[in-house]
Every structure is written in C-alpha cells, then in structure tokens.
Image (cartoon, rainbow, N blue to C red; front, side, top):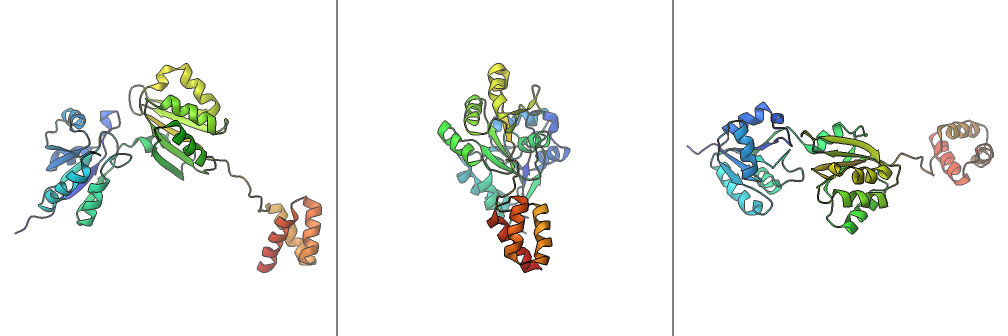
Amino acid sequence: MPNQIGKLYVVATPIGNLSDLSYRAVDILQSVDMIAAEDTRHVRHLLQHYGISNKLTPLHQHNEKHASPLLIEKMQQGLSIALVSDAGTPLISDPGLPLIKLAKAAEITVSPIPGACALIAAISASGLPVSQFMFEGFLPRTSSARKTFFQNKLDCPYTWVVYESSHRILATIKDITEILPGERTIVIARELTKLYETIVNTTVDQALELFERDKNMQRGEFVILVAGTEPTQNKNDISPEQEKLLTVLLKECSIKSAVAMAVEITGARKKTLYQAALKLSESQ
C-alpha cells in the first residue's frame, strides 16, 4: 500500500518574546518528521526552550530553489514538514515561496499555523487607519532608490508599511524627511515584543531629531508606518450642497440657466457644474 502523502505546515515563530509561540505550533514542531528552517542554528534555540528535539534542514534564499524539490519528494513519500523562518510568519519578507508553490502544484496540503508577525503587531498598535494598508517589505539599500520609492508614495491614500534594519534606519529617516511632507504622521516601531520595545507616533519633521537625540532609537529591528494622504475633494466633484441647488434649479429651468445661476450663487467652476448638471438631468 503506497504511503499517504505528507503535509506542509507554515509555522509562525516568535519575533522576540519566546512566550509568543502558540500551543498548536509547539505541537506541530514536535510531531512533524522534519523542520525546514531559514537558519537551523537560530531555530534550535527556540526548540531547546520548548524541549523539542526534531530533525532540522536548512531552507533559505540561497538554497531554496535546489532544496525545495527534494522536500516535495519527501512529502510525496509520506513525510510531514514544518516550514519556519528566523522570526515571525514565513514568507513575509522571508524565504519559502518556491516550496509553497511546488507543494500547491503537487497537491500537497499546505496548512498555516498562525502566530507572531512584526507587520501585524506594528499596525495593530500604531493608531493609524489600517482597514486598508500597503506592505512594501524591506526598503531599497541605496539612498537614491529609497527617495524614488518615497516619491512614488507621496499620494498614496492608505497607510503604508516597510521594514528597515538598524544599519540603514538613520539614513532612511533622513531620506524620508527630504521627500515626504513634514506634517505627515509616521510611526516607528522597534524591537517589537522584546525588552526594549518602542512604538513612537510622531511627524516626519520631528522624526529625524528623535533619532539623532536618542542613539538607542538607532538600534534593533524596525517597522516604519506612514499615514496616507488626507482625502481631498476632487476638483471635478461638487459638494452635496451644490448638487442639491442644481437639482432644484433643473426642475425650473434649462441646464444652461441652472448652471449659470449655480455659478453665480456658489462661485464654483462652470465646467464642473455643467458636467454635474448633465448627469443629474440624465438621472431625472
């Protein structure tokens, strides 16, 4: 009788505080046949903390294209494998995508074991609007590329989020202050769930002073959240009051006369009111 096909578990691990590993994650890491880890030395510390002894195999950005097909073969032979990254939820700016894609193609069940994620932890405590947000992963390494990135984000209407390392955080904040409006709200979250966890809500203008004044703010792992642009009325839109006025006028006179009177009363652009009047007349 052929072996039953194995299963791939995508297991979230702590981003700092070891107590954030879920009971289910512990059970999975104990029971699978093998753990594919971004850094086997790093995850071994976590396993020892929970008294877990299991086989480890490396799966990182430098070997995943070669190693992933071999892991697929093992699961096709009936073995179950847990995928973990150095910290947080795998594939969120971490390796693992080739393995997941191959598993899907081979009809191997991929089961997420949810848990810690720096992105979600940061936005949940940021105080910024996050019913819609954009996550951009790690920023470019060069200043010119970062400035181009920030320039492209100037008119983004949603909160956007990036990761940054301690090596480039000060240079990144300097680049931000050169491109983004000074009054824009920015949240800096560093060392989440760790002893020196810090979450600061400030403005672009004040952020650089904060980092230069407090050298501790230049240490650790960072999540940067930037508020989107404030919604503004489109120049081709009319206000509810202007629409109500046009509706009343159109009941009594022609579009041309209604628009002329509305322009005189409101001072709004004739072209904008005329386009709105046409739409209103079509709907009546």
